[in-house]
Image (cartoon, rainbow, N blue to C red; front, side, top):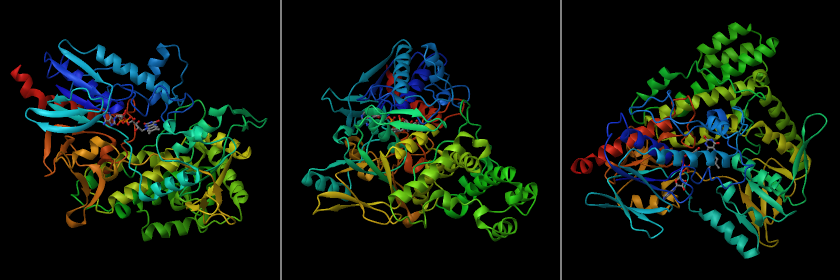
Length: 617
Ligand SMILES: Cc1cc2nc3c(=O)[nH]c(=O)nc-3n(C[C@H](O)[C@H](O)[C@H](O)COP(=O)(O)OP(=O)(O)OC[C@H]3O[C@@H](n4cnc5c(N)ncnc54)[C@H](O)[C@@H]3O)c2cc1C
């Protein structure tokens, strides 16, 4: 008897691998087993991919990349148990979906729910999949296994092995957040806290009400869709092909800012084509392997990892920039590119080469400006800031739709490709105590530059700005309260004049996973109960907590309070973000996805742990 807690894509993948190992050709073929799947939402889809969410909320993944089943590319031990990817599944149902489209998350949810039913039906003789439509609230070690307590009050499940595949769980609000909520309550205002876009109580935002929005990332684009097209507004086309918004009159007035002050950049993708991707040349598998072999706490991200990322991105940027404008460099393109590839980013030789080739710094690849486009800029008012951001967005949109002609999108593709290498280095545990902070920064930078929304969302944002539905509040946004006026305030060093005053505050982001502040009763109970401990990065006294649940990174066995990996308790995915980095990502078809490889490792480990009791049957 084993228990899978959480049946989003990862729990589903573990279920698939358990069934594969128990089925024909598997090491446990012929063994009877009960596989308990504990998930309060639709199993398979889970919370992120709820089939009930509005159809307008899009996946950030392309249809051709989404799958619930491992394919030939996945290097794993057990036998295959395959099935259709999202594209094939939707075609079988007559849904016209192209591989380069961003499908709705609800559609993906229906596919994942189908995959769960499909796998359950394919359970071999003597194997039962037992769903529990509830939440697990606590684990308890008992003689012969682990008891899983259930929120529904149904009898607890005692399992020989358990996996925690709990994904994005809620976080407790911090002191400042609670203060803002209290202020809202006291003055009859609205404060919508960080969370899932489709779960936010957006109907509390009245038509015409001024709403201060914190966050300009993917969550923001979802909220924007729900508050505009989701309220009956329509996007049409201007004669020049740009988008135009026809309001329904039920939209609130949104004034949005963030740390950067500009929205995430659009994904580079030519209309009607799959993106070409980027072949790594400098931060390749060998470099990642060398770094990963260095030993605990021995690698500094800023001086050893970032230069590789920057060189990879810079080379891609210059290659396109010099193809488009060969005259911008004083050196011939081929010579510059060869010499650039041979010098370390940030070194004196690198600086000398750039000075020789590009006397005007404005002609150079500037990752700092890419990260903080508004740094050092001040505008007299929001109107002036808005005009600047509109130009910025138009340029980004044009680049995204013709990525072959864009140095920026070439660099973005390179940055996206380096993420897998960064993950290899991170999971090896070799980064020093500054690692967690630097990885958090790179997650934001990488997401901003290379994992933003589809270009269509940027086109819509432009139209909404032009229609007066959205304004921008600037970079370094700080939210305050005006007790006398009974309103929230939003101030930014980017914009002069009076701060924004609003009767509603919308926090448009999903909090990261941190064991110390988790709102999950289950996760919070583990360390106090001795079944887990918080993970720390870096060596010795310099080690700092990363917010992750501590596991053995190879077997994914959860370490107990003493640091010993437990043979029957596993965890995968987002609760391990502080160890693995970039876990909030699904499996990619044809990409030897870590999600499937880890699911196989976990399934194998769980059945190994359960082998004792099975052997006795
Ligand atoms: C809004 C949003 C959009 C996203 N879009 C994309 C995208 O387009 N492409 C992409 O690759 N990634 C996307 N992601 C990232 C996402 O993390 C992964 O795609 C994927 O869902 C991770 O799978 P998972 O199973 O690890 O976690 P989840 O999908 O979060 O599933 C975990 C499940 O565990 C359940 N659970 C939690 N606690 C308990 C408990 N105590 N008892 C029982 N069950 C529990 C939850 O209900 C949930 O269903 C998105 C994430 C969010 C939040």
